[in-house]
Amino acid sequence: MTTAVSQSVEAEIRAIFKSNTASYEGINPRTALDIIRSVVENAILNQPRSLQKRIGPSEIGTPCDHCLAAKLAGWQQIEKDVPWLPFVGTSVHSQIEDIFVQESLKQCATDPTGGVQYAAENKTMVGVIDGVEIWGSTDLVDFVSGMTVDWKVVGATTLRAAKVGPSQVYRVQQHLYAKGWNDAGYRIDHVAIAYLPRNDISLTKAVWWTEPFNREIAEEALARANRFAANIRALRTINEEAVTAWITGLPRHNRQWNPDIAAGKECFDCKRFPDNPVMADPFLAGLDQIK
Image (cartoon, rainbow, N blue to C red; front, side):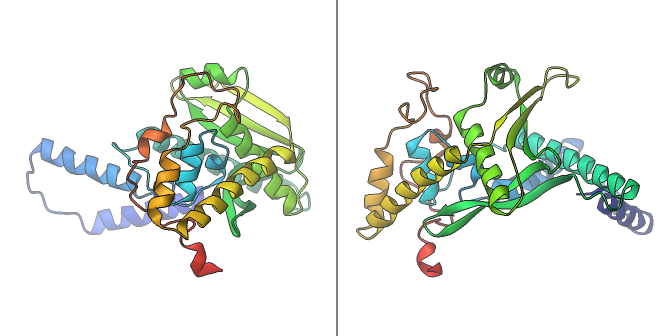
């Protein structure tokens, strides 16, 4: 949400407040706080990122065979609690988006013919899986340097790990975005991740990582996803139970595809997929209606 929109909404709310406030009822403070909490939690659970069902660039690079197949098959992840930390990250993204929108406006005002340097939270098509276009929102594109930037709001453990480089899933995500922008006709030579400390009082401990764009990283990840998608489609010609049996039996992580995973390390996301899946809007099942 840009500042102009924010000010417009705020002005509207203030006008309503002045003209029509609810009557005092003396509700118990604890009851009132429960209601307030439910308003916040419902908003978090129903924001676009929480409701996303189709696989996106941030998930294509997962080293876990089970998670990749489950997501492609349309299995619904079960949230045992309100995803507060992702909401914090989304909120930071929104504020940084506003910063760069304002920066672009200032640049245009200073030099109207100079062109826009930054694009914040713009969508790009990163590739195709089983005939379906996969789109994702790039946090920031710097057209002058030819670089995409992704914000990661992280805790101390991830921040320490970032000093030796990103995880495979993060790296793939960045190269998918860069591929998408290059395919759209914009020159992107580098990818970057800004690891922003969630628990520090400043950005002094942030980790800024970058490397040259490598199309092969993106294309290999898409090829892997397409192989899984083709297998799921073939098994669906038998029945859904065949799909479930295959996915349930897949490795919960794939050390051959991602040697960085330490032996014995569990996949966190696997626990969010039930072995007896609750179907969301199926990614692959719905393709039959499209083709």
